[in-house]
Length: 313
Ligand SMILES: [Zn+2]
Image 1 (cartoon, rainbow, N blue to C red):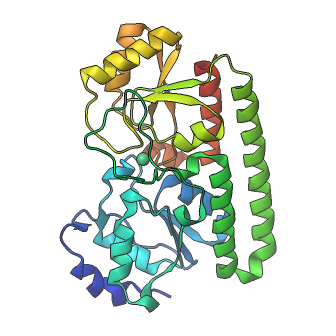
Image 2: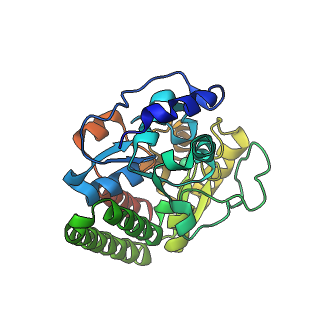
């Protein structure tokens, strides 16, 4: 059922800081049930499982920074229209609580806040990290999906909600879930083998670092310019010098950036040390070209494995 009109009034009340004026092409285009997901990983999970049964939409415009997202009026209508809404529910998605509070209970879509159902860690303060301000005590790092354990949980939760949406298709949904889980488990094993057999266990991120969960899952050490995605400022000279010293001391062959990074800090480290710069895809978002091409999160995870083989050996 389309509820957009009935919540438009509530949405207008949110005008101001919450709602920006940039309109996107957010009008649903089919009569199939609508599944809306905030970021690329959740969008892709829903697409793998729901396939042709639903219209699956990603809220974040491709090519944009997930941490700079601002809810538009068109997006508000899209969320209200959704039959299922998937979101992480971390710090950068605080707007969801405000949006839901502004809607009548019967107008809220069935939703799944995945951070509640996942293993999560507090943001870490490690040596050399540059922070704009003291991180809040026990602030949760929201990039839960970068561990396979949590990703499998996201797959299960999404599948569970889709079963309610498509009760007649539960066998198809179960088959798809099992097939996807098997692919993820096989890839997780390949990561384990690669990392266990690698020459070194240290990642150097000359960038923001949304991979705390990946690092913890596989026992990797890390140095990063910034904790999580908390800062979007230029790295200081002290930060660059710290990373340069670590690359030189430990003979690190490559430093990492995350996707859609300006790469400035990494370039500076590479200039000083001669190391390579590699991209590790976090799954927040993809470029418009990648999005059009139909790239999947599994594709990104496979590319990451090849990149890790270079950086850890
Ligand atoms: Zn992030």
